[in-house]
Image 1: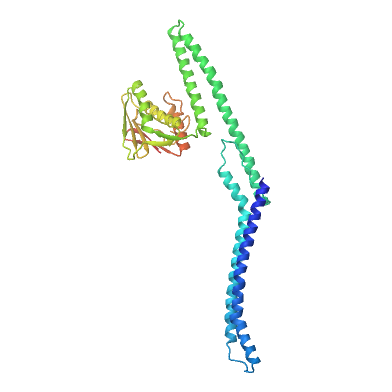
Image 2 (image 1 turned 45 degrees about the horizontal axis):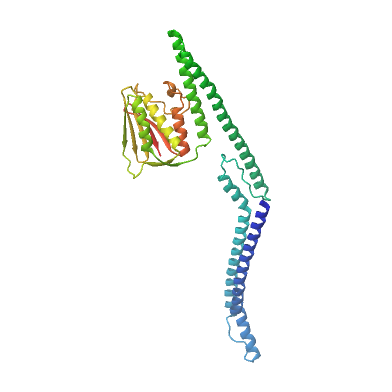
Length: 356
């Protein structure tokens, strides 16, 4: 298939090259004919006619005509040679670089999630052959690694969820038995630990899927609707005073995003604000000019480490009951959608800003 396409392209290139050179030749021949006739042949014909008629050699400007004719012919030859050289170089360069352009275009369109290795055009150029072979090996290796990592993440999550669910069910049965206070405290700690492990497992799986770009589907989502539904739950279960302001200057609050991931982003930012706020503290959410701002008062009036706040399992994010992955998930979601997330500490407040 590749050889047939290459032969077809080569044939078309030759036809175009021959056509262009023929046009140049057809225009050059009449010009040379007119120059020869008007600057050389005309004076010679006058001399021959005068001699034949016995009139003697007439007064002619043969020297001036010869000089002018030579200069015009020189310019014409230079123009024809330059034009021919330009056409030749252009067609040769296009022919030589066509395999490279094809390789570059197909490499840019390569999607590792589809796992389909592109078929590059075969070429006789050794360097391009090496490039194509190296790219094919690299794509095959990356596709295999991606498939293995994806299968491992899914299998590991599934295999971990099953024993964790069994542990919770056993603990539920154990709680119903008669136990003293010390035993109840131990069972309660175990129950909380299994819940924490379950959340950690789900978050790690979510991060793996985001990093592998498994949430590629996007649609128009109204961020205010998501916020309203989310805050209905948190206003019930938490005592925080959560205020939402919409100063959107545009006619719509919709974003092009994956609905599930956008909901995860909002949920993690709100949960983070609740965890790092005093029990009676106020949480402010502002939507304005395609930006989201979530701010809350600090418990100890100290800023978080801006260099680590979005890192996984950073020391600041695990001081509370979190698992240290919430803000890392926020950062991964923003990177996937090509948004920007920032952290600032001002006037005793933690401020998280998402620029859509």
